[in-house]
Length: 90
Image 1 (tube, one colour):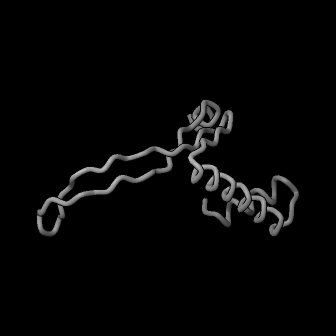
Image 2: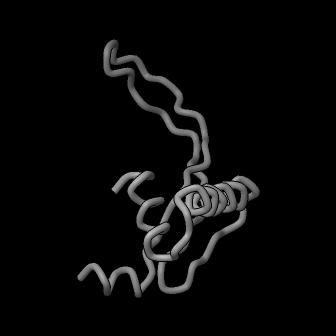
């Protein structure tokens, strides 16, 4: 399922027009993105939790030359599925 499929599914299940469903889906994505960029966690009970993990700087190797290189520290988005989502998949 891609984004357009998701918008169509939301429009069909909620009775909204595709434009309204598109705005709703975009609004959810924007709210999650904004919360994560502020360092907050987004917890959707039964679905899952979006959070930010901090990765430390590390040393790696350039695959072309084999020379050591520094990989800088970064923040990575993470998602942990909730019990309801896990149960519905299994």
